[in-house]
Image (cartoon, rainbow, N blue to C red):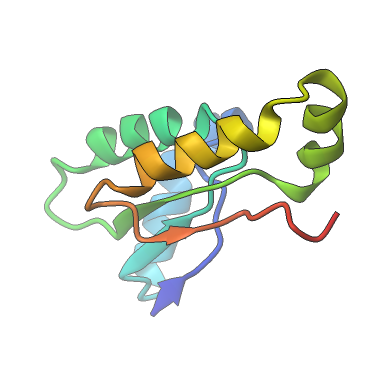
Length: 109
Protein backbone atom coordinates (compact mmCIF):
# COMPACT_ATOMS: atom_id res chain seq x y z
CA UNK A 1 0.00 0.00 0.00
CA UNK A 2 1.15 3.57 -0.73
CA UNK A 3 0.29 6.80 1.09
CA UNK A 4 0.46 9.38 -1.69
CA UNK A 5 0.14 12.55 0.40
CA UNK A 6 1.66 12.86 3.86
CA UNK A 7 3.21 16.01 5.34
CA UNK A 8 4.86 14.02 8.11
CA UNK A 9 8.06 16.09 7.83
CA UNK A 10 6.32 19.10 9.39
CA UNK A 11 7.07 20.19 12.96
CA UNK A 12 3.44 19.39 13.92
CA UNK A 13 4.28 15.68 13.70
CA UNK A 14 7.74 15.67 15.25
CA UNK A 15 6.59 14.47 18.69
CA UNK A 16 4.59 11.59 17.20
CA UNK A 17 6.65 10.67 14.15
CA UNK A 18 7.78 7.28 15.47
CA UNK A 19 4.17 6.38 16.29
CA UNK A 20 3.05 7.55 12.83
CA UNK A 21 5.72 5.42 11.14
CA UNK A 22 4.85 2.41 13.33
CA UNK A 23 1.14 2.76 12.51
CA UNK A 24 1.92 2.99 8.81
CA UNK A 25 3.87 -0.25 9.00
CA UNK A 26 1.08 -1.97 10.94
CA UNK A 27 -1.37 -0.93 8.22
CA UNK A 28 0.85 -2.38 5.51
CA UNK A 29 2.03 0.91 4.02
CA UNK A 30 5.25 0.33 2.10
CA UNK A 31 5.78 3.79 0.61
CA UNK A 32 4.96 7.31 1.83
CA UNK A 33 5.08 10.21 -0.62
CA UNK A 34 5.76 13.55 1.05
CA UNK A 35 4.64 16.58 -0.98
CA UNK A 36 6.75 19.69 -0.59
CA UNK A 37 5.00 22.87 0.50
CA UNK A 38 7.80 25.43 0.23
CA UNK A 39 11.47 25.80 -0.66
CA UNK A 40 12.63 24.45 2.72
CA UNK A 41 10.53 21.27 2.55
CA UNK A 42 13.12 19.12 0.79
CA UNK A 43 15.68 19.73 3.53
CA UNK A 44 13.13 18.67 6.17
CA UNK A 45 12.17 15.58 4.17
CA UNK A 46 15.82 14.63 3.72
CA UNK A 47 16.35 14.85 7.49
CA UNK A 48 13.35 12.57 8.11
CA UNK A 49 14.53 10.08 5.50
CA UNK A 50 17.99 10.02 7.07
CA UNK A 51 16.50 9.52 10.54
CA UNK A 52 14.54 6.41 9.53
CA UNK A 53 16.81 4.94 6.87
CA UNK A 54 18.78 2.88 9.39
CA UNK A 55 15.76 0.95 10.59
CA UNK A 56 15.36 -2.59 9.31
CA UNK A 57 11.66 -2.15 8.64
CA UNK A 58 10.32 1.22 7.62
CA UNK A 59 8.14 2.54 4.85
CA UNK A 60 10.13 4.00 2.00
CA UNK A 61 9.85 7.77 2.37
CA UNK A 62 9.80 9.63 -0.94
CA UNK A 63 10.26 13.40 -1.25
CA UNK A 64 8.27 15.51 -3.69
CA UNK A 65 8.94 19.14 -4.55
CA UNK A 66 6.47 22.02 -4.83
CA UNK A 67 4.64 24.96 -3.30
CA UNK A 68 1.42 24.65 -1.31
CA UNK A 69 -1.57 26.36 -3.00
CA UNK A 70 -2.31 28.41 0.12
CA UNK A 71 1.17 29.96 -0.06
CA UNK A 72 1.10 31.05 -3.70
CA UNK A 73 -0.76 34.33 -3.23
CA UNK A 74 1.42 35.25 -0.23
CA UNK A 75 4.55 34.49 -2.22
CA UNK A 76 3.31 36.51 -5.17
CA UNK A 77 2.61 39.52 -2.95
CA UNK A 78 5.98 39.38 -1.17
CA UNK A 79 8.25 38.49 -4.07
CA UNK A 80 7.57 39.39 -7.67
CA UNK A 81 10.21 36.84 -8.72
CA UNK A 82 8.58 33.94 -6.85
CA UNK A 83 7.66 32.12 -10.07
CA UNK A 84 11.25 32.31 -11.30
CA UNK A 85 12.46 31.05 -7.93
CA UNK A 86 9.97 28.17 -8.03
CA UNK A 87 11.02 27.27 -11.56
CA UNK A 88 14.71 27.26 -10.56
CA UNK A 89 13.95 25.16 -7.48
CA UNK A 90 12.04 22.65 -9.61
CA UNK A 91 14.95 22.40 -12.02
CA UNK A 92 17.56 22.08 -9.29
CA UNK A 93 15.83 19.81 -6.80
CA UNK A 94 13.60 18.09 -9.34
CA UNK A 95 16.63 16.68 -11.10
CA UNK A 96 17.53 14.60 -8.03
CA UNK A 97 16.91 10.90 -8.63
CA UNK A 98 15.11 10.47 -5.29
CA UNK A 99 12.48 13.15 -6.03
CA UNK A 100 9.55 11.05 -7.23
CA UNK A 101 7.03 13.73 -8.21
CA UNK A 102 6.06 17.38 -8.24
CA UNK A 103 3.51 18.31 -5.62
CA UNK A 104 2.05 20.46 -4.09
CA UNK A 105 1.69 22.42 -7.30
CA UNK A 106 0.04 25.65 -6.13
CA UNK A 107 -1.72 25.90 -9.48
CA UNK A 108 -5.26 25.87 -8.12
CA UNK A 109 -5.13 29.31 -6.50
